[in-house]
Length: 67
Image 1 (tube, rainbow, N blue to C red):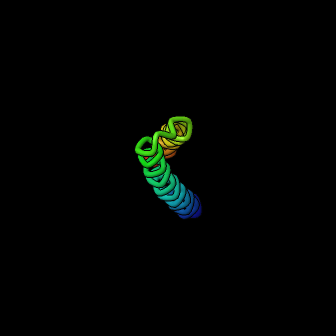
Image 2: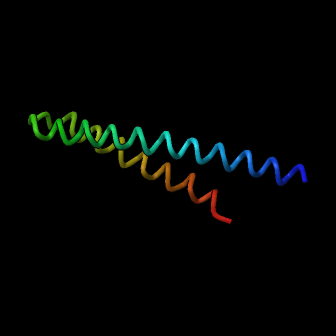
């Protein structure tokens, strides 16, 4: 019974981390699009790269949620 409760708490923590990462990723994509619109290509590419990295991190964390 204890391992089941511990596994449930761990999966809930992973879900919280994924939600935070996705919210931050949406913010970064917004900044990247705005930077492209204002011709600030350095900022646009940097935020796009960080956003892609966060997408990969979210995918890795979501993989742990699958049985």
